[in-house]
Length: 305
Image 1 (cartoon, rainbow, N blue to C red):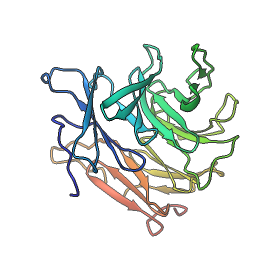
Image 2: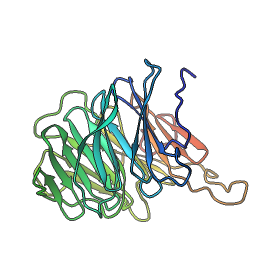
Image 3: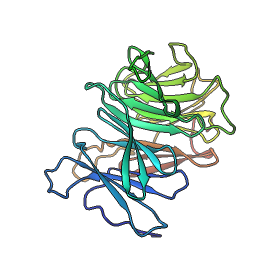
Image 4: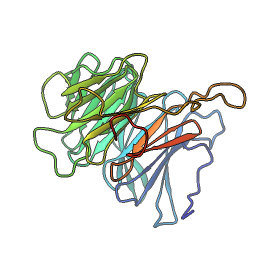
């Protein structure tokens, strides 16, 4: 243990470090007025200062979870349900920045900021992917029927996306600055599709799509640090595709027999798989329930990893 932060009396649902690790954002239910309270506590702590700052948000985490991403060292965006808004940390506390107008039937679930292009990507339970150009107050939205560009007058333009909830949303890692005509965003969904979008393109289709046979669903998705490989985790396997050669998987890994054995009560565990690359892009770690597997070049991976 290096340091602890006090001031939270309820379960933490999200943790997020600022880009330079100066601030730690925590999201939890607000229980200051009792357990039946439905508001949310936004808590920001700093390793360099003894005091923390908090903000109470009228949002029910039990109905819609919140995701967060920092867009600068002092600004962050919250996304969840029909909420999409930016906040800023000041000497006097946390203040609301820009609040985007959303529809009552829109249910946001994921948000990711790209420091290269200054774009914010959000995902919804209905399969929509919204790409927001935060600095110019212009929003490009990719939806199930359409992709929309939002401006101050509320006009929209639409592109097709996933058929159902989106489970993963990742910007392609880059070794250099992006070109003016391409910035890739990768999404995965419960429909078993992995889609790669060039958010700079005005085309109404993704750059390419990979579809896994049913009943496989994308439970977790991770991109290699060099941005060249897409790894996808399902409940019973890991598949790896190369970004510029995506017709067939370059590698496949399946757990050994007994991986999903019954627990002490005789029930088969059914958690959500998680997946991540190491910093060099040579190994993957796959976790499910109380099991973790380290997948590398020496593992029994079809085609190599």
